[in-house]
Image (cartoon, rainbow, N blue to C red):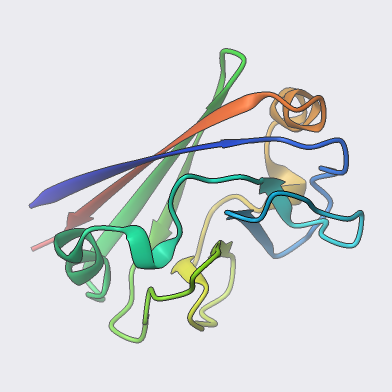
Length: 142
């Protein structure tokens, strides 16, 4: 079983891509340099806006989440895992984590990319304010 969601957001001059354990997009309109995990703002969806079917599928330990980030023709695919511990209810933020830590902001754990390891060209495009499409593909591995 596979379910997709698409989120539109944009970069910001303060995107640095330096965080060593996470990356995040948010519906917030602004960000500071302290948000070194944030790679996209003004997202048109937050966790609680995702469909019930998508959230139900992602809230399963057998689900793999593929996230495809595309900005200015630069693409990166991230592999993460779902978890039965995920609430998926945060009103503004979506966070991908390298660790197993789960909170209301978490959309993926055990991610193979974090802000610091995303392609340099993608971070440069986002720090210039580029638009970014975020495709989420949840697939349960039965």
